[in-house]
Image (cartoon, rainbow, N blue to C red; front, top):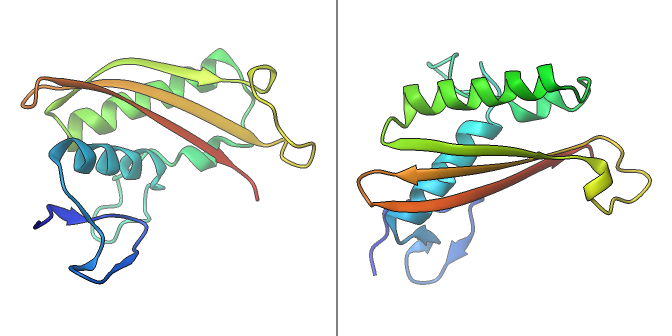
Length: 131
């Protein structure tokens, strides 16, 4: 079956050369994840693309920081993926997570979104940590 885009991270497949995304829902989730994880300036020829979630690992876990992340996600989605509507953004803290002692820098975000053309809802869970 032909695919829509290359699934990331790249993995070889005997049939197509690389494993491909097969549905629009899967491709949109992958693109949203990359939008949230890409650091502004990292994408060539588009220095404003991305939220850069990892850059918030050493920020104070405060309502102001969470509000800044939430605003940045909404702004980036509106600009680069206007067919998506963000329904809710939740943050997980260390009290809710079972973390190894050496992994104290941890940030988890859950983005609930609605894809208008597909009339579909989904949740993207992203966590970043220092390793």
